[in-house]
Amino acid sequence: METLLDFFSFSDPNVRYVAFGSILLTASAAIVGCFTFLKKKALVGDAVAHSVLPGICLAFMLSGTKNPFYIIIGAFITGWLSLVIIDKIISKSKIKEDTAIALILSVFFGVGILLLTIIQHSGNASQSGLDHFLFGNAAALIGNDLLVFAVVATILLIAVALFFKEFTLVSFDENFAKSIGFPVRGIELVLTTLTVLAVVIGIQAVGVVLMAAMLITPAAAARFWTDKIRVMLVLSAILGAIAGLLGTYVSYISPAMPTGPWIVVVISTIAFISFFFAPKKGIISRLFRQRQIQHQMGEENILKALYHLGEQDEDFYIKRSLDAIIKRRPFNPLTLINGLKRLKRYGFINNGADKWSLTKEGKDKGQRTVKLHRLWELYLTQYLHIAPDHVHEDAETIEHILTPELEARLEKLLKYPELDPHKSKIPYRD
Image (cartoon, rainbow, N blue to C red):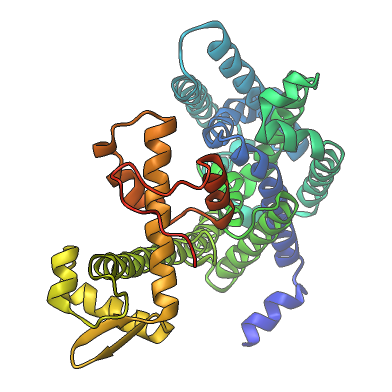
């Protein structure tokens, strides 16, 4: 607890620089990364991250210093150049986007490693620590670094605020943007520039190899929690900031632990939690909804089977045994019993002496399912000209998802028919 209080008091200047620097880097990169993620160009961040290495090395070779201002300029030039080349390759050749990205990524990164090796054998004492740009070294951040990062982060935020509508439109529907006269190429150029800037300012903390994770992972995690882009941007920035802060804290309490990789570990953990436990889009939630839908379909099929038996005997409230229901429709016995028990709880079924019968509510629900099934079969035969013996399977699925609005439209379109293609009566509510 004492260590925790010492860390969050930010009394140590080194801790303050590292913590605030990491937060600035991760939050600003996460905001720009949202648009890259929505444009389905996640690999672009990886290409830029690897392509900045030769720019870093060239900036050092020309300036002879690791001044962050020169490093950022050099990294920005080669990162931006890599995206321009990728775009040209895609537009001027038959090479696809993923292949072009892989090609430029490997070439630029290979050149960067070559230049880094030359620098390390040059005997220049100032080159010490330059290799930290590969995997990051947030613990080495100082006040001047923080000032540069703050300026760049401010530029990113202002640019996103100014071009928010344009970025949103291009990210979701580029073709529509072109059709209404938007300068899509110019907007993409601005977004490309911001993406490069976001990657460039993060490489000192997270490193070339891991920076792509900070660009895309917060956006991917935030997307699971919301459908609103404004909320997504804010949430992505918050998740990135949390990762930056917690990664710094782990490095603070355990100096042997590198800050950059731990930032990536934290945001990856947040992303996995989002993937599984987000309330609407998470895997657990989706599995739960799928199970609910399966139960609903099974229950409606049971009510439909009982309704068919009622049609056959001209009495919908006769008690039926499990064997009689299974004879009408092949159910798994255990699944059938569980479904009948649920329907009893809902008030759709009565039971006694191991026999089951419909209630008035259950009869109405089964009747509607049968009606939708037969209406859909008739629609397929009349309007899509499908043979009557080929429409049953499709209607078995559609009957469970037709809304009351679609039901009314079908009735009106088919002029309230009395019989389906198999000459069975279409039951309407009494």
